[in-house]
Each structure stands twice: as structure tokens, then as C-alpha cells.
Length: 231
Image 1 (cartoon, rainbow, N blue to C red):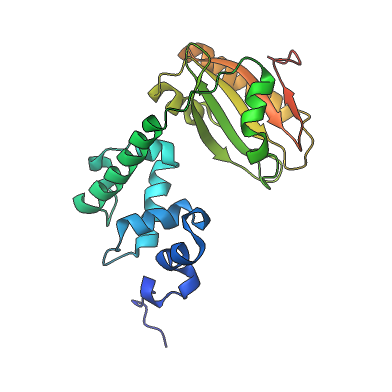
Image 2 (cartoon, one colour):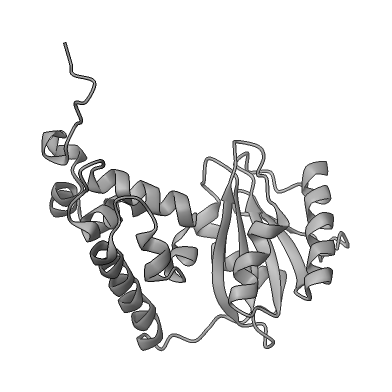
């Protein structure tokens, strides 16, 4: 009989489930964000494995963009993440932030719905669930970030204004372009799409961040609310 206090440690996991072994065998690109974070953490705590701690971190901060802005104090508030592990994560994220500035790649400029759709088409057209994203733009319509707002089901994605505009406010965005995909491949807006867009546009007016467009990505086609006169 298994003891109620028994816990499966990382070493007892099958080799093809251990993040470090998977990285060595398949490459870093094959790993999930949780697995990459687990490798950064190195070890777990008496109560949780490194994978479980990594899951707690992403559950707390929702996505890597929000995690990038987390302080060491906020990270160390998570049970099992002390100052040492929080410092490791923060240092790695700071290296990533600096690397993004070193590349020197010009920021994309959005001049038309086609420009926005082109940025995300190949990444989003084959997704099997609805993903809601936002392109954050500065006053010159340059893309300063592509924010992954939420992931829904096969035919719906729920978006709250708080989730959408939180990062836009942090990044001092002047405007946003809403983007989500339809796994069916049909880019026709639904009534729910229209309702959500109207609500988010109203919230943007109150906050002072304009919603320029909402683009639905289908299978190698898209619909622009702006072009269709829906915004």
C-alpha cells in the first residue's frame, strides 16, 4: 500500500518526462515554459518538485510577459520559492530582456490590417483552440509587444478588460490591436466576437488606450473589424 505521504520526485519520473533529459535529447525548443522554468530552478523544495514550483510561478503570473515584470519579492512569496530561486529566475529574465535590446531588429510598424495579420498568421492559423492576443503599439504605431491575453476552447475565448489592458498600461501603450483565431478556419465574426469587441473598445476609451482594430485569423485568411466598419 502506498503511503499517503509518498511523493514522486523528479528522479523517479520516466526519463522522457524529465526536463533536463528532454532538453539534451530534443533541444530547448521542444520544452514547455514550465519545463524551462524548472531547469532554471534546478531543484525543488521539500513540498514540491521543480516542475511543480515552475507551475506555481506561471499560475501566479499567468504568462512570461507578466513574469518578466515580477519583482524578487513577488516571486519569493510563492511557497517553495526562496530568495535564491527568485534571484535565479529574475536574472535569467533580465538576460532575456537585455538580449531583446541587443538584437537591434526594427520594431514592426502597423500601417494596415494586412500588416497586423501578417505578423501572426503563420503562428495562429493552425492553433487548435482560440487564442486571444493583443499587439501593443506606441504613438508611431510600432509594435512594442505581442501580448498573449488568454486561451479559450475550440470555439470561444473569454477576455476580461482587466486582463487585456493590464500589460498595455505597464508598457505605456498608446493603442492596441486585438487578435484572435478561429480554429475552424472561418474568419467570420460571431455575435460573441462583436459583443466582446464593443466592451473592450469602451474600456479602452475610459482608460485612454484606443482599440484600433480587431482581427480574426482563419486558415490563411482574416477579417478586420476596422475594414468591415465594425469598429
